[in-house]
Amino acid sequence: MSGKSMLHLFLLAVSAGSSGSALAVNPALEAKARAADPAYQQAEADDPKPVHPGAGWLRQVDTFLSNFNCASSDFGDDLVALDNLNGLEDVLRKHVAEIPDLRAEAKYHELLKAWLLKRLRNEGGLTKEQLGNLLTADPGISTAEQLENFKRQAEIGNRLGEAEDTHDGMALCEAVRDSFLYDWQTSTDRADRLAVLNAALEAEANRLGITLK
Image (tube, rainbow, N blue to C red):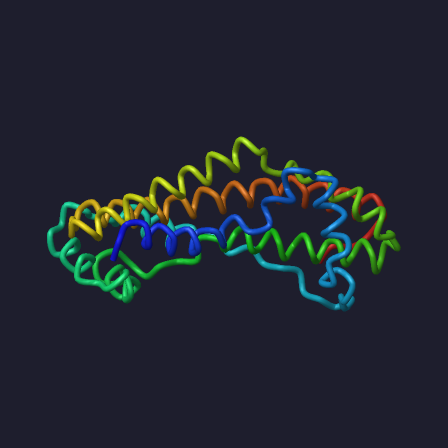
């Protein structure tokens, strides 16, 4: 498969990690869009509070990211033998570890944000406009950061394609590893930004005397 085709497929895959980021460049636009999201209009008062993935999950992530031994010829050979990386999970399970959900913390904060907004609307009586104003506490992602992310995606995608074309097992392993490291970093950055927003939402809920449990 050509490097160009591999790059295209790779960018399709990693773009999921940055979905929704474009609006985050402008907090006001994101606030308006988020406040109008149907997910915030259909809450039930007894929704359970989201649970953080926890220390066990973080250990799984650390184990997975640190266990890549790209000097292993067996590992490289198994990667090169794949057709367009189909079956990658099985190879990684054999040589590294089970692939953890690298975006679990960002997903947790997304769910927590939605849960807090529901509490603020249902129990605090806040309007869409008031909720939108609160959402501007999200620091967002700058255009420069987005550009750097796209450049990083392209660089890793090119390496994946070139390594497949040349059947270079070590280079393919390193590119695969770096794609997971990229996903981990971008999702961690997103989680950190959401944590800032959620802290502001929690502060407003506490100010209004809403019990968060």
